[in-house]
Length: 171
Image 1: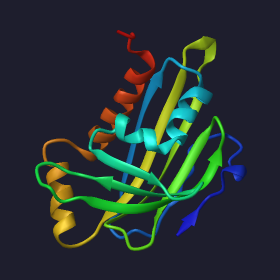
Image 2 (image 1 turned 60 degrees about the horizontal axis):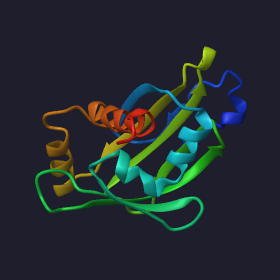
Image 3 (image 1 turned 30 degrees about the vertical axis):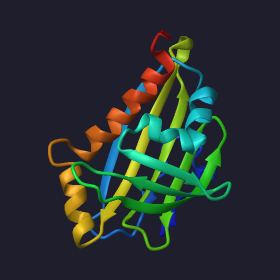
Image 4 (image 1 turned 90 degrees about the vertical axis):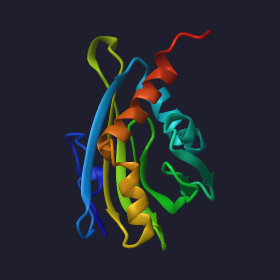
């Protein structure tokens, strides 16, 4: 797998995750959140928060500072899809990049970028993911997950939850 280093990326554009994934699908989505990039980064970097943001995630278990176990439960069944991820780049307040490791049900890599907008308009959050489905029952389950919604719409829905987390009035 090949990843371009963000240190070589002087224009602060998203990292080009050129993964050697056969039939890999590239997803990109973004949203504006009325919060400081450092605050949004901090919530995302505490990855055990992510099941509150992405409702189809059932669990994210931290194994070390850079490794974690993820559990997704696609509708409608009781089967869980699991994978291990490793953070491969982390620029506090700006971006986080990861990839799956080991024998996982799904292979993917991704990055999330947090960019300050001018005139205190908030933070642009850009999410980029490349994934490849395995063969067999997991592929069928994942296809059911995205049957009525595109995978990109599911990711964007998660970003909408992130926006609500920061912007929804407290009751």
